[in-house]
Length: 374
Image (cartoon, rainbow, N blue to C red):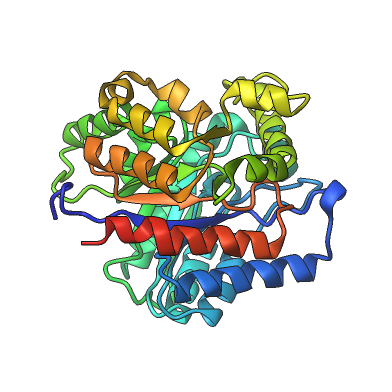
């Protein structure tokens, strides 16, 4: 399929966070998220992605595969992906068994998205050196791909020692469920070209896409059907963007400050300087509210997009707007490099009420998504 002909897939993105200042019973939170995913499937969403972190006070989802199995049991069509699973903290054979099981439960709808991790506390907690994360991930991907393809695996290294292992049950998808690599650094992009079937990145743009295609060429990988998805952090569609900005701002500040602290501690570029209030959030550009006319003028200036670099892209990818604003932004990205998927985190920071999340989903499904139908 050509990039021009491909329709954008619309996906949901959940981390199951439950911050103390907005805490609700965990079983209710999980139940409402499952209900939202079922609603999404019934109303046209294509995918749901789950992210993983560990030892977070707010209950950030630590166990993707059990959550994926629960989603699989409640749904029939929507595809279920890890976005991303932190590979260095998992035994690859045990993980392959869980992946195969979820793929069977879902009838062949699971996709494995992998990252190498960056939070120091996670590596300390699991007793894994962060210096080993790249090698562990590369070896694990080799083992998992072989195990899920039906091979009897023998593999010995400084990290693993498996002798004549045959994983059962076999997954439904052949030769194995699709494997995505995710991340927000150039190294993640290169790893995706070497080991993955697709790449998912926050704040996709032409610069990132061209780098990915170049890396695929270096690895002699096919480029005729590229799988390239973007995560739009805190995508909220609203009939009243200013009101929605006010409702979502504190949650976005919480999420942004968390990630910036984690990234800074790992020696990486933070999303922004510490955000103390809503005005600082507005000035940071992390959450944009634009009227439709202004958005239309900006979106027509496609050359701007060509000049956005990778680092800026991953720090400025949150958007609140009317359905028209959202559609124009996505249309520009699609025209620029054939964007194949968008992931929407509709409940950034874990506090937006269930019915408002459903309303945002409804606007995406009924107003934005039909504009990208064949």
